[in-house]
Amino acid sequence: IKHAVDLLSSTETPSTRPLVTTLLTFFALQIASMLVTAIQSVTKQIVSLDSERRFAVHTFRHLHSLSLSYHLEKHIGEITQIMSRGTDSVSTLINTFMFFLLPCVFEVIIVSAVFWKLGTPTIALSTLIAVGVYFCFTLA
Image 1 (cartoon, helix red, strand yellow):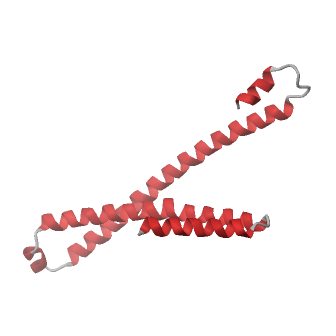
Image 2: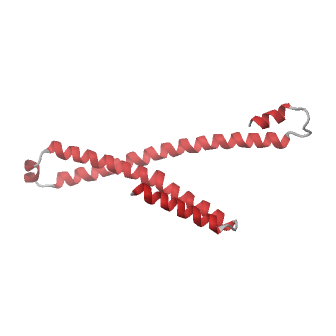
Image 3: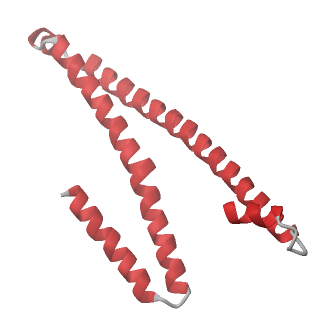
């Protein structure tokens, strides 16, 4: 951006229209990126809260369907703590898989397809292999 601003301020260039268009496009794309990030964050929050609520409701329904003898034998505090941990675990799984892992896999597939289409299948395969090895070491 520094060089672009310097070119705009110099009087030597005959036409600055392509440069101005490029700068305006860059800033428009930056604003669009911020808007998409904000929309993604709101959507992520809505989906996460809804899935946690559904899981908790399903678990409470199951808990209430159990017999009275089960409730008398077990400690309700422990059950509540286990249910809370389960709800937190479901939220973590959804955040990890739906909002980090799947978009990353999708991006790798798209990038590899672009490399393959451009006529460089070795780069496409090396990208897939490198990301696959990284996932294996991360999960192990």
